[in-house]
Length: 406
Image (cartoon, rainbow, N blue to C red; front, side, top):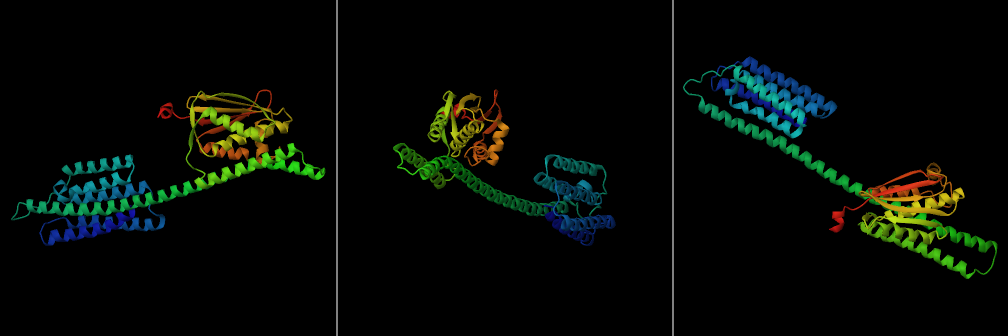
């Protein structure tokens, strides 16, 4: 914006000099030439300094633009003072800096510049050098002609400045749209990566079980029992299921459409799926969401399974009984899911997840869960449990009852 003002000011100074020469030479008006040319010369010096400053430091901020518009307003006041004040047909040029301020400045500097222009116009009512009388004419025709020239000049200035301003706005909109597309693409890739990591985390348990069976068969060669073969088939089925689920998510996009589910049904289904992987864990469940519903993003079930795995692994690492507690309840617009274990506590649990310090896990559960829950506009917190262990609280936004009925 300042660059456009500087180029327009060069044209304005040239136009002022031509107008002074025209009025004196062709119309024969006895105007004070020295003060008028002095104002134009001062405006030219200011403009050259602004141009040099612009090349060195760039556009500057709102203060720089307000200073430029204030300088134009003061220069216009000086020119009008020596050429008739409010009787000059170009007095409405006061509206140009006010309009530019309304377009490009915040409310406070815009109001300040408007008040400044109004105050200077009011001052000119009683302080100005009157225009000399034009012999042979009442001067009204000349005044109308001046108003016409003033309109053309004002329209040209506004067209140039507003055209440049709208071009800047359109360019910013294009850049914003491109940035939004990049952010959505990056978020989709991040979500797909989190789901892939979560699937790897889930695959680790059946693969470990199969590895133990194979090690046992290698150490003690014998015909596998029917129970061992059934366990192997079950674990292989789990692996295929996880890989198929990951492939399906990848085909429709990791950020595919979310589903709306009953809160207790969502938690219960996730628990049953997890118990197929950890059948030896005893779970005390207390699901009391009361039929409320929530929006389930694709990565949310994986997050619940990871946190259940972390709780079971914490018990195993601490030598505690293989028992965890799972409860749900509604707290206003939030669904609270509470998972309690008897492990080493939140500090040791966080360290273990970060560096893989316990159990056969990959150390990814906590990070994956946090990312998925935050993407669902939820939150997770952990605190020490009375009597030892860790309590993990998950809060997820519930649907508004009106939206549920709709």
